[in-house]
Image (cartoon, rainbow, N blue to C red; front, side, top):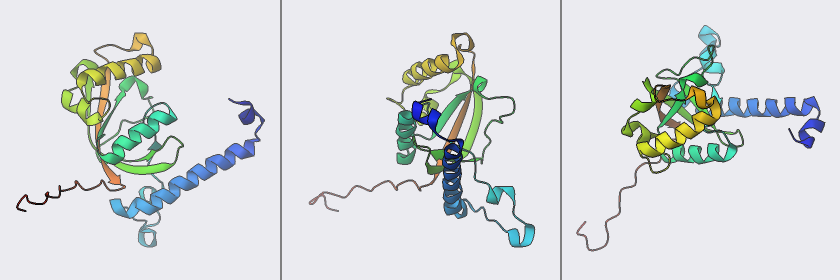
Length: 194
């Protein structure tokens, strides 16, 4: 904690938290119709799914990495993520197909909405090249995926918790908002007969 943070009044933290919550609610209100979640409270009363924003998180473990990985999501290069099962607490459910997630940038601002499309658990050693490529990081190779994830999980979980048999939750997702950019159709060069 910095000196500025130590000297700040508790109300300042409450205000910052409230602003972040307000931003999540505003973002959710702006995208809820895209995923066909309505309030329908006139007939049924407000439901949790329609009124409470989905969980929000950022990829990575630093603001810089959060922005980098968000960029990969927004370009469509990153369509998967992985979590060591040891990272999940007992009261933290694993993601399920159809779950919605708000992705935050490195400054904790809501920037994207994703929907889980598949969830599998495999041993670290059994992660496939196709899954590593779907994570979209580095050169997309399985070797890169293994090297970087081993480094990260050893740092987060400790050397004793990491091993080739460690269970990994492999999740794929689709970008719901902002809508993925359409793939551009190349414009034929003059004289190509098109």
